[in-house]
Length: 247
Length: 247
Image 1 (cartoon, rainbow over the protein chains, first blue to last red):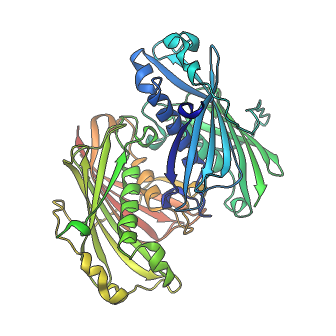
Image 2: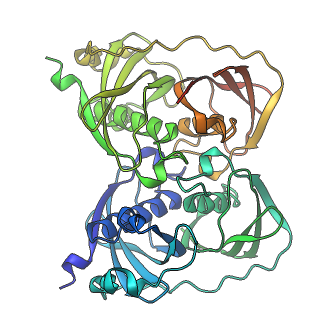
Image 3: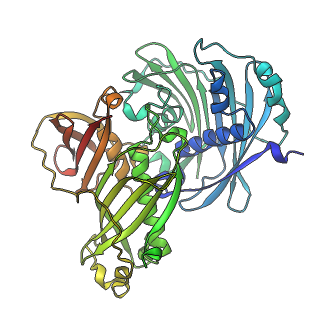
């Protein structure tokens, strides 16, 4: 019953996709998750290419990844993805990440909206193709918490950078995955020797562009951190929550 | 005759692997080239895993990539790779990059040495497995110039950064591809609107490590540039030559 609703995609942890500990980086995993969303949607008639014909586009609003273990260099793994629910203004897409033997090693949750590319206004998902996206709703298990509210109080800047050529995606925005990489770069290398990221949550709030100055704010302790990125001294671009576990 | 000597690998230009112009980034292409080297060598018994058993490792010394055209987002392409020649202290590995119809859209040349992982001393390639790597030498065409000598005279720093967690690979070094990305980030986004990188050459000179300060030196004009990266105010890490063409 759920078979055509779940898309499953195979990967291998490539040498340049692992960090210094030999485990897949969270940025690469995030990239794979977004690609799987694209494959799954395209195969079912509501992918980027199809919705772009209507001048609509999918926008990633939230992403939460929780991993028990990351694939090691050269290991095969797979990603299942499915639509958990569809509402007027957003849809929830979930993921299971499995090791080479099919055992779940992590899960992810994402929240997407659809907007008109010209007006940037949200589209009622239940009106797109008569709401047929709902035909793919699937109740596969995703035993991790839903994305939570992220609050960052500190006004003290931890780091800053200017958005460069390699940060910018085909839409002309800093790409969603780069934010994750830049936030993980706020932590010292030594931390990753003894700890690993168990959960990473991201709330995407606004777009940033080439040459924007991105300021990073980080607070927290004992393995639980919140981070915000603001652009050009003002507007919040995204907020993240990062939970480390001892290895 | 050349069939088992050439390895061919299939790829698709993924959404997060293209730049703002919708074309595959040179960094991602470089990553694919290095992976293809790994696949090809592993399949023929002289890959990293095998040579590591002897405490040897492959070290990339030169890389030159010359592209007529970059694959566009969602396009399929393939990479052929083969060994051009093997000498005592280095081997030349070449590549052809083909579009979805098999038409060559670019070529690449690389130079590799093998070193002892402990002593960091070079290994005589003709002594490894009785020089059997030579059995795979192949004379497939690679109609681009060999890597040239790169000279950078300027003492004026264009940019600098500290090597971060996401720059570091499984060997504990700043990864070879990151240098390429950081060098391309020296050029303004606007340049990539009207020009494209036709040829990128890299000479890898020394390793750099976490928290090293990398200083970038850039000189040249009219589409032909040379760049150097030096670490901690001194030693040269790598040198690059970048040739742009009008689109």
